[in-house]
Length: 254
Image 1 (cartoon, one colour):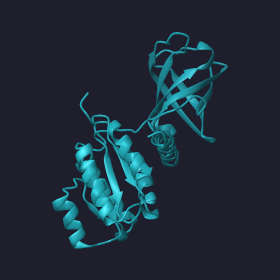
Image 2: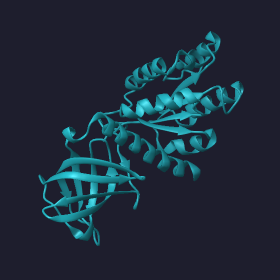
Image 3: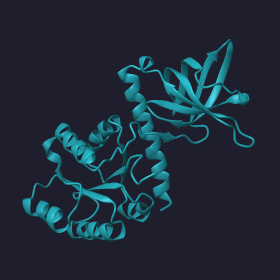
Image 4: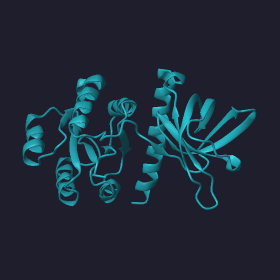
């Protein structure tokens, strides 16, 4: 599969408060977004995400010469990484230097124009850089014990652990080796994820054979009619937070 087909990771380095609000909105629009407050750790880790997009906040972390050197280093060390600039400083010369001399690919965004306009500009920039790829939904890998599901099925209370979650569906393993066929309808599933509870119905669209000593994985797609907008946005927010925690742990080791 070609690079970026499943979407690109988008990093915002030293995000100011207005950008944190914008990032939440970007997550709701199914962009895979992350926040980072350590430029050196991100620089060391970025080779693992060669087609990532990195937006640098010039107003924090380093002084102007430091950020110029950092952007130059990223361009050399990770040439496929897209770089964008965010700042409160509406300086035409600064803008020209980054766009024309350093040739950052993802624009120069002035944050003081407000969250709504900033979000609009960033969405256009991300779409121009094909940040979603062909993927429609961001997914989060769930570590053991993080997310569970329970439901009543044919007179039996079934419990399962999630290994994967998105706003469109989930992958789960039922306790006790229970295996359900593709096409099985599951109603009123109760999901408990990071101490939050969400209810949804769905259908088993695929069942993957159990690995040695493990349970079969069931891929469940949610019934859109069972999720109102508030539940759907809650799911997107949970996916974003799970992914952020995983990225924080990865960067901590960089």
